[in-house]
Amino acid sequence: MSETNYDSLFGKLVLEQKFCTEEEVAHCKKLLKEQTKDKPVTLEYLLISNRFLTPNQAKRVRKATKESKDAAEHIPGYKILGKLGAGAMAIVYKAKQLSLDRIVAIKILPKRFSENPDYVMRFYKEGKAAAKLNHNNIVAAYDVGEAGGYHYFVMEYVEGKTLYEDLAQGKIFSEEEAIDIVTQVARALEHAHTRGLIHRDVKPKNIMINPGGIVKLADLGLARATDDVQMAKSEAGKAFGTPYYISPEQIRGEMDIDARSDIYSLGATLYHIVTGKVPFEASTPAEVMKKHIKEPLVPPDHINTSLSGGISEVIEVMMAKRKEDRYVSAEELLVDLDAVRRGEAPLRARKKFDIGELEQLQQGQAIDTVTEEDRIEYEQTISKFKVISTVLGAIIGVLVLVIIFILSSK
Image (cartoon, rainbow, N blue to C red; front, side, top):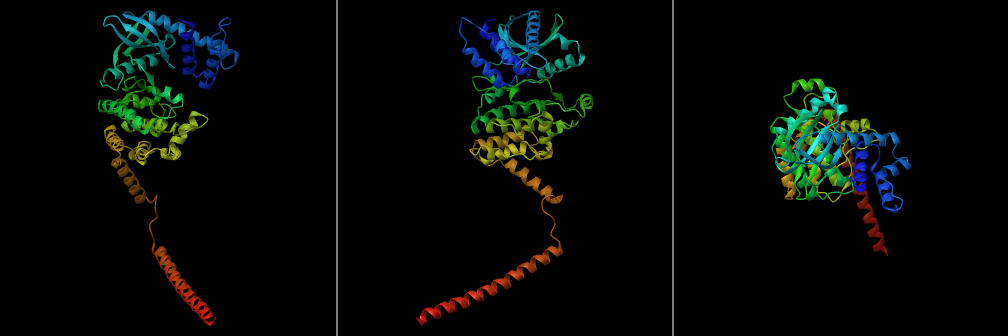
């Protein structure tokens, strides 16, 4: 691997492991470009010398890199072409499947996780979940297995980048671009939901866009079947998801998680890409999640005033605190997205707002019932106002007559 490729990969890994911030890596990459050829240094060296990264953390990244390289060499039938990235539990390679002469992506579970049955079970569940789906907007699954003590998952290789990469560069998407992206993800979710799968981790990092503008929903690592009662019980009370995009019911660890949880997360993603900000920010993940449950959402068109009222209404319904107030399905959401794209009102969203207000009225949360005492007080106030108005009218009339008399005397 060349120095440039190693530096690029090292920078990507330390970010994914959350050892450094994007600003710290960018600062050192800038310094790297300024280095003279007679004194070459690596990104790793600069991160350590600037005290952004500890030597122990650097050692861990190097060890993970070596381990994953060894693992890749143990998988028969594939030629490893390079590393695509790494997450908290697995490393993904770009490879060629020799039998079919096609480019694929291979996710490999490191040995330190392979010794834990729970990690292995979750790894295979992801592969099986992906295998149930066949949609143009979902990363396809090809194979899952074990070789040389390593567990691997072979999937479709998507040339392009994640939505997160654009957001990290400060890009704010136009309303038209955003609707196109979210429409494609909603179609992917509609396909998954009708097959009884809830993604549970819809976020910019799991949304890929190829050069042709085709959007692919990836990473079914947290996916759960709606009829998997055993898993629902084992996970009850635990929050599964990503803090910036997680739904309130996922935070509470509710067992009854359905399509509306994914719609909330997609709404949070849409909010982020059209405003450049996540819906709720705080210093800790726990505080962020608390805000998802309790804090009112700042309407997106209050942040980005170029947004239409229609897209703002759609996002607010997608991110309603109560799942009963959200779109029932991705199909219903798609109707409103299509309407807003055409410049029309999102009728489903407005109906949700109307029903929500009606329920609040019925529950006494919005407007109190007018009592007989209130009615009498109101009538007395009106009566007093009429008397005062009559008196003021008479006074003004007298003043006018006096002024006329004075002017005529002159």
